[in-house]
View 1 (cartoon, rainbow, N blue to C red):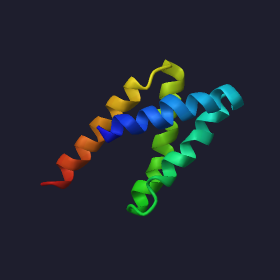
View 2: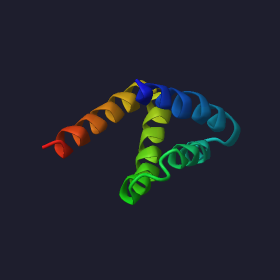
View 3: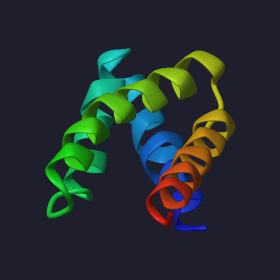
Length: 86
């Protein structure tokens, strides 16, 4: 449930506000607060969050919807949980 809230906050609210102000560069600007929420987690996760955040932002920007990014986020987290629990 918190993944959907994060997608709404960072991609649904913050990113679209930034895109209106800065154009496509708003996707990059909105990615940084998303990355900051992952500080303190393993380094690989934090680094991959920047590139993943850009990808999710690009996807939301191109499709004009946060649904696909939210579904992909849920899928990736589920995959990581399954792979690390064995």
